[in-house]
Image 1 (tube, rainbow, N blue to C red):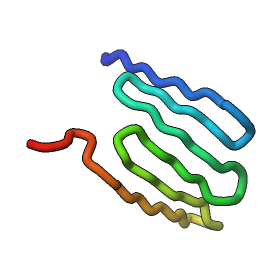
Image 2: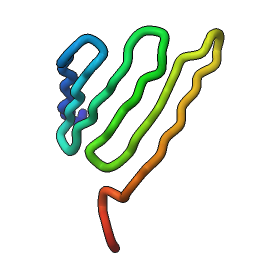
Image 3: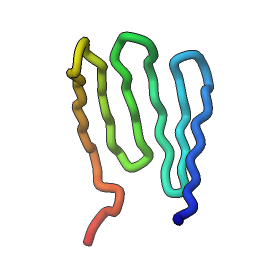
Image 4: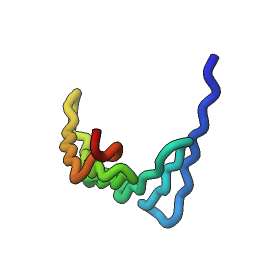
Length: 69
């Protein structure tokens, strides 16, 4: 079984800092509104839970984490 590391720290109400072995992310938002997540690799995600079995997620990546070849 693989050993993993993952830690989530609440900084303020609605603001979380998520950390794992290789990267970090910052999540903003709580409750019924949208949630915005900004990752260390340049990924930005906006997500929202909708009523019923629906969900909304849009992800944009501004730059590649690995860079060139």
